Image (cartoon, rainbow, N blue to C red; front, side):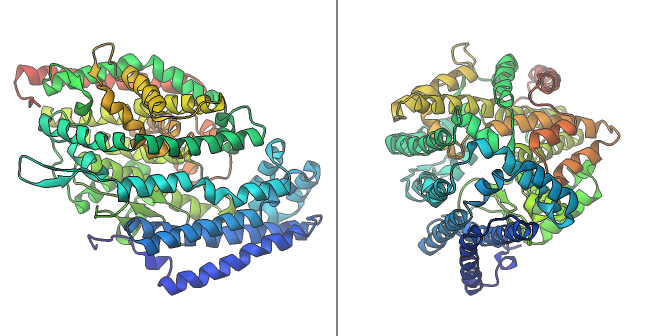
Length: 604
């Protein structure tokens, strides 16, 4: 595999000329939406024809969008790629505008007539969920002309996120520092992620202070930008008649608001376990006091130093074997098939993601892989999305293949949990076992507690804007700092959190996604339930989980999870997670005590 660019975009389009040819065809198809608008959809032929044309346009656009976005993310400095990305976004907005009349028209069809057609017309089956969902949305849809205006403005609504990406990844003047080895490093997002795990506490502190000082220098700009993003969500929610932006965000996939509030309440109740975990980290690291910049350094003896990409792939195949042969075969196909761009490069987008929008091709994964355990866990996470997309795309027709994030993160966090449990079983010494246990515990801290913290902050941010306030840098830093200190136990003497790190809100891109982060936490609750069943060998556990993945978006995600046995609006799965976490803490505490007796724990 090419270590500079790992994925193969020729699977999408042979070359740029091919891309622009299809771009033109899709632009022409988009205009057909205006023509279909003139037809009354009063017959089954018209209804079937309009739906087929609509989804065919989206299907081709998805392929264009994956090419434009992934090629731009390969090098965010390339202005031609960025221009192509923006043009593709603009085409997406035009498609939305051309078909903006469809949902309001469908929503006002007679429900009995629609049900009669679905019962008597086999070739409408692929559209049945879409049609029924359109009827459900009737109370919150605007007149067709107003829907068209909102659709036309959708590209503008993405401007704050686009600005955030360019500003923080291409234009930020990140400083350089010299490491004790003599290496000079530019402290950008990728370097910060790597060096916050550095064994030298002085390096960790210097890196954190320099990194967040850069964000502090642009805090006013970032606050203005986030204010625009949040304000757009609040205004659109109000226009559509929702009582809040949270209600508007949860409505499209019929997630009960009780799920969001249940998460915050149960996470708050489990906070003593979080404090226990952080105190155990302090003891394991041999520190008198735990600081913000001590939260990511591994504790215990590393058993995965400098894992290569091929070794990481072999680890995933072994760890995910409980998911069955079909799952493993898709993993191997993706490893060999150019689905992944693994390595960091100057100008490449930071972080990691997977997109499965190219329905007729395959998923694409972007990583910035480093050969540590966090890097392998991130790889497992994104391959969870990739296999989920592959299964959904292969088992669902296009109209019901796309699944919402509420279920997506179940697949990804499942992979992380299975990977860490596999490594725990393979650990050959108590110190190595402690190292894996610490990562498994940190997996819960980062994915459950940290994301619940984010969700708490995000809810308050939207409430402030809904109350008429403006999001200034001082307000955001104060709101974030309060929650940061509470969730890390600053007042209880658990972690010392200095005020300069409260600008971390500016580092989190997910706040531009609108009530997204809570789903990481709820998904970990669900995936822990499934993982425990799988590893216990419970009959039908594998089948139920794969059926969930293959279902794609064929039903509402909360409903699909309930059918699989997990009700995230009830306290039971959260409390089961607490029991599991308590057991892990007991094991780790015993190993830390034994290591102290043997004086084998390293000191940070």
